[in-house]
Amino acid sequence: NLTSPMSKSGDLTRSEFLRDGGCEVLQDKFSSLLSVPSCAEAAARCVANLAQHAPAARRMAEVGSIKTLIDAMQAHTGAEAATLQGDACRGLVNFSQDEQAKRTLNSLGGFQQMLQTQKRFEFD
Image (cartoon, rainbow, N blue to C red):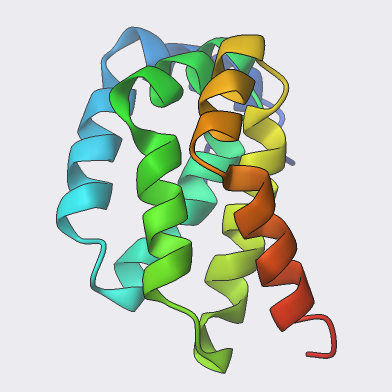
């Protein structure tokens, strides 16, 4: 996984992903496959990893990835979705590094969604 936060070339990969229009493609696929739990989980993980790069976080906020991430959190709430929820929360935190993305996050109630998720899964 080249977008892994532990990858040595992660920053370069995130920059290339942003440059090559990857944020738009990811958003398109994420929103179209949102109802499939395994796809939503993989997309949430990818979004969270890419959002570590502030320019990518800003671009993903512009194309609607924050809303889609929140929609995924709301669509998949059972115990089987704990990994998706965790990755989504990590993504929301990573988005908050960029001021523009943070404004979008606040306007969509992202932090409230994260707190609700953490409360729901606090003993799991």
